[in-house]
Amino acid sequence: MSDLTTQARTAVQELVDAAKLRPGQLLVIGCSSSEIVGSRIGKGSSMDAAQAVWDGVHTVLEQGGIRLAVQCCEHLNRALVIEREDALRFGYEIVNAVPHAHAGGAFATTVYHAMKDPVLVEQVRADAGLDIGGTLIGMHLKRVAVPVRLSLSKIGEANILCARTRPKYIGGERARYLEL
Image (tube, rainbow, N blue to C red; front, side, top):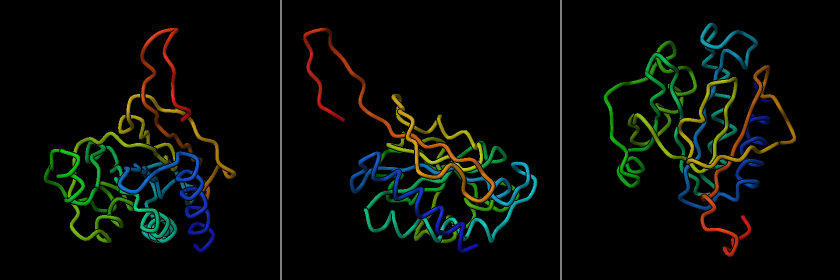
C-alpha cells in the first residue's frame, strides 16, 4: 500500500503545482478504490487502498492550504464530502447522508471519518480535480476545465485524469489577457 500512498502524493503535488492552486482554493477528488486494486468500479471497494490514497493526499493539501471535496459514488448521487466551514464559506447547500464503503465509496468514507466536521453537499465548483478510476468528476469543476498531464497515469491499477480550471476569456480582438 505504500506505493499507492507515494503515487497519490506525487499526483496531487504535481496537480497542485500545475494548476497553481493557492491557499483556500478547492480541489475535487473522485476515487474508485475498486479500480485501484484492479476490480471494476463499484465491485471491489478497498478500505486499505482508500486509506493509502488519503495518506498520500492529505499532507500535500494541508501544507498548501488547499481545500478538499471528495466525490461519493452514484449511490449517493455523487454528493461530495467537504468540511462544514468550507460548505458555509462557499455557500454550498448541505444534504443529509453519511457515506459508507458500499454507498459513497471507500475513499469518501475514509475522508469523512478523517475530517474535523464533515458534511455532504450536492455540488461544488472546484478549481482543479483528480479523477482516480473513471469516477467522472467533471460536473464538479468550474466551467472552463483544462486537462493536466502528470508524470504518472495510474494510481495502482486505476487510470487517472486531472484538470485545472481558468477564468473564461471575454472580450474581442482588442482584449488583453493575463497569462494563466
